[in-house]
Length: 192
Image (cartoon, helix red, strand yellow):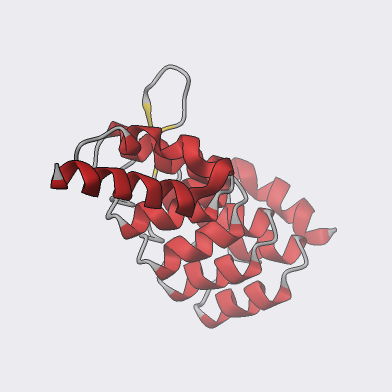
């Protein structure tokens, strides 16, 4: 009887914390007999959904309960692992508040983004300057490769603070680490 009362109180507390807007994210947990989070497909799916919905409260709840931020999760309809970590998905989905929260909770800024770019690329693209700064400061991927130069990207976007930070790390807009066929296109961009 006592454990039943504890379970009911726990469920009521979770509902109160989540509110109406985020409660569906946790339906799998509310029905569970075990209140602690074990890293499973359901928890990772809930984390992905919370990020997609820009629900910082739900993300905080999952992180506090111990969900593993580095487990890549599925973002495809075919249920194939695309390799996005929570931070990668937050940056790719333009969720700056969630991205900063995850960075501050030790999410790996070095994790790759499975679509051939980097977290820094998306942070610059979406003008998430604070996120970009944290990625740079914490050792994220900053060096030009495969025809992409983050310093050039930041310069084109008018993000001079990011350009300066990258220059301090030895990465400049005029750096080229690419195949010959891309050099002419990059040069045209620099001349504009």
